[in-house]
Length: 268
Image (cartoon, rainbow, N blue to C red; front, side):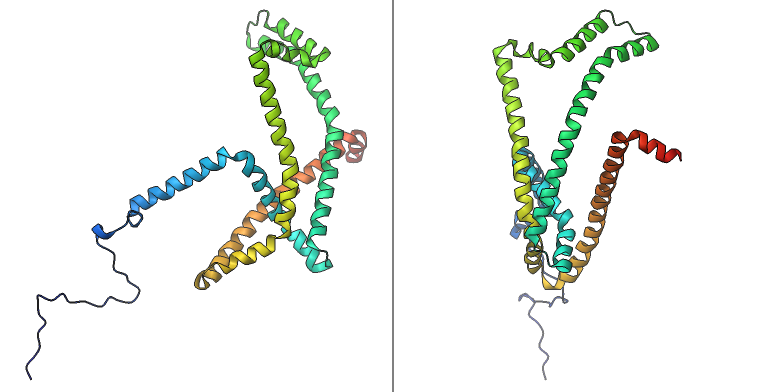
């Protein structure tokens, strides 16, 4: 039998090992298939998203805050539903009501105290500056007297400090526009954050279930394991800091409200 030799002029196809793919020739590549260009495109996309988020920070900030709050309170809402069969909207409404009462109470209680402390600090600033100047041998000249007069006028008439600003019409409109814009942003944030939080927390578990369906089956277990570990770390950090902050607020509030009783209790 005559052996058959391959024709050297005919291109022979060599089978590839399983799991390997043929990389296209450089002339047949797209731009995103070139590694340096693909990295630059990813970097540019990330920078654009950061710039876009900063440019629309007034819109995205309430959304991000509400989503973070929904993430932090979701275990409590889920436990109330699973253990006591309380619907999620009812638990969320209770959380919003308690938060509103606490915030209004803090504003009502700390508002006058904060105004008094600011006024007292403004009165003592000239003496503080004078003592620092005497200690470090700094000559202030008439600056201390001018600052003392400014503090006195601020105590008698707090709006007197704004009169030089409003002396010019252009400056007045600029300051007025800034104040109105900032006030509007704060008011809208206080209105939108509870609304966003209500709907995010209501459908939080359902949204997670929808996202899980888009994860490929081959990577689903690994992705779930990694996400669970990240969730434990992040949630533990935020909830721990939140618990520490709430505990500090309660202790400092008791110390400020009942200093005599607290000192007497610890001196026993």
